[in-house]
Length: 411
Ligand SMILES: Cc1ncc(COP(=O)(O)O)c(C=O)c1O
Image 1 (cartoon, rainbow, N blue to C red):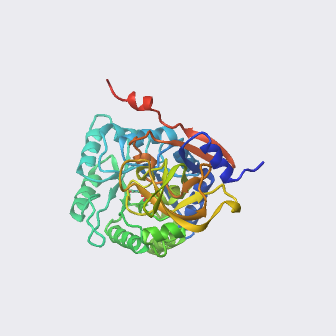
Image 2: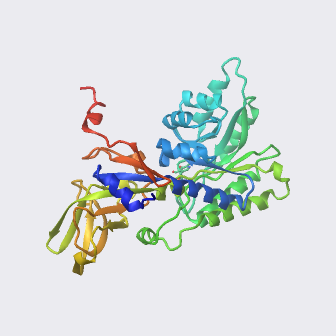
Image 3: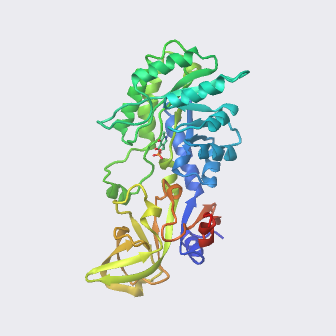
């Protein structure tokens, strides 16, 4: 028998005070829609799923099942990708801090290394100068550009880029396959800036094969009207708009070549795929009034829901068990707050005319990006995670316990 989401959520809250819920069907659809949007405008498209955004095994493994590569930025994420990937060559290694050992792993598996700085090249030289090194290593150069006066600390300026290009081309072991650019902006205009800046660099690439172009991540995903209002967004771009601005410009640029000679285009989405695939559900702990303000205290908290943005009010939904006979005559406004002792731990606001009781619960959508990976055991241990898939529900991470936390200390 098909159960509705509300029944499934209530089932979870029979055993938990609060939990994250991962909607796997929604995540898979997001991946399909993003592929479709980009492949409409550019024929050779690859998605490198950004592990840092949410690296829980079910997320990464399903991204790989749908054909995504792993986009990783640390030793830890390299190890995770080696666990999750069947084809271990489908890995892009980004980031400003790469160790000798993790670079070695990427080389062994024939992955791609996006060079951010001189230190990456130094490690590569140390590796390739060991005697009987035989391989060709696929490297790309991360570009540094300033958009709207916002200087980036990643990648390389024009002079460093040229210096490293010469070094790489002299090496028998390094194969410069292309370029990478990522900036912390999500607007269409900023993506036009990325692609124009990249094309200016491509014009100086010279007469060498170009196999790889990586335009980074940072796309908006599907955003509800309420969230768009909270974030002050008028019309967040759609996947199709991103695909069009990037794919069309690149297609025009490579038009003089046969398709077989066009480079692979990589994108590195995280939030746009995973944010709306996660919701947070919480029981109501208590309701109180102070003077004329009403407060619903929950088992949620700011640091579990939006650790990178602590000021935006999140849309919160009250799921009421009340039928019409239990309506208040007047609509009341509530602040929905977290369990912490932080004064500003106010999650969002809602209006209700139902009499709220202990069978009601609160739901917060769009909490899949940079939440679980930045999780902490502040005041309470981190909550459980449940998976929704084909109308079934399964626990995929137990709620942490005090003993889990105490075990990590040597005393
Ligand atoms: C290089 C790179 N790629 C991809 C991403 C993923 O961004 P998002 O989760 O916003 O899509 C980031 C995020 O900072 C990044 O720095």
